[in-house]
Image 1 (tube, helix red, strand yellow):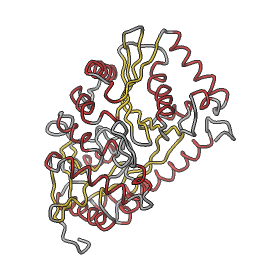
Image 2: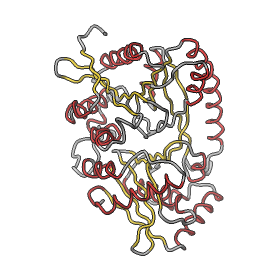
Image 3: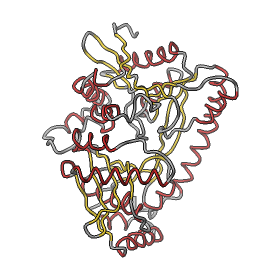
Image 4: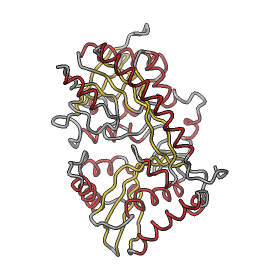
Length: 406
C-alpha cells in the first residue's frame, strides 16, 4: 500500500483508540491540509476557554465518543461504528469515521431511491458503509492522515474494505473539496448538493448586517423580530461552563418536543448533550428564549475556531416567528459577538436566503459494488450535478443583499 508497511485495523469503539491518538491525528491532518502553517500559528496564545483551531468540533474525540458512549450510535441504532485506522508500529497515521449503516436516516444526503431500486431487483442495499459525522451535515475532513502518502493509503484501504465486506456500497458525506477530488481520482462518484451559510463581513452589530440587505428583506426581518419582542420574549446566551445541568435538562426537553411534534424520534438524547457539556464546553453556545424568568425555547450552537454551527433547536410553547429569532437571528448576533467568520445553518432551507444566508456548494462521494447500478447512478449524478449547478447559479442571482454591499 503506497510502499509503506501500514497495519489496517477496524475499531468498533473509539475508546480503544483513545483521545490522544485520535485528536493528535486530527491536528496532524489539519496541519497537512494547511501547508502554509496559518492554522499552526493561530494556536499561539490560545486560552483554555476557546476552541482549538486545529480541532474541528465534530471530529473531536469527545464528540464522536459521546455519540457511542450515550447510545446514540451503536447496537440497535443502525449506526455500527467501524473506524478504519492505519498504523505504523504504534503510531496512528490515518483514519476515517466509518459506520455500517442499516438504513439511511440521519445522513442528509438522500439515497432512498437507490435502496428502492436495489430492492426492486432483489438485491440487498443495507447494510452499507458510510464515512460521515452522524446526524451532522457539516463539511470537514473525512480522510484524516498525517501526509498525502498516508491519505492515499487510507483511500486504498477504504476501497479494499468495501470490496472485501461484500456490502452494497461505500459513501463519504460532506468531505473537503480536496478529499473529494482525491476520491474521484480513485474511481468514486461525486454528488453535488447545496447548503446555506451566513458570512460575517466584519459587522460590528446586527444592524450593520441588516443595512446590507435589500429593503424588503430588512423590513421582513424587523417585523419578525418585533413580533417576538412584543410577545414578551427575551434571550439569554450561555457559553461553555455557564451551561448548567438544569439548562441541559430544559434543552433536551425542547429538543425532544420538536421531534414529537413532527411524529418522529430524536436522534440524540439528554445524556449526549450532558456529556459534551462536560467534555467540550468551549465548543458550545446555548441560546435560551424566556418569558419572564421561565425559558420556553432553546437553540444549541456548536463553535469552532472560526465558525458557528446552528445545530439543534426546540420549544415548549408556540410563539410566532420564535424559531427564526432563536435559531437564526440570535445565532447571527452570537457569530458577530464571537467573531465567527461563518454561521452554518444546517442542511437544506432555501428560506434561509431571505435572512442573509447564501448558497454554498457541498458534495458527497459514492462507490457501488454492482457495476450495472454504478453505471446507472453515475449517469444520474451527471444529470443531477448539472441541474444543481444551474440551481446554485439561479440562487446566487436572487441574493438578498443590496447589489454593491458585498
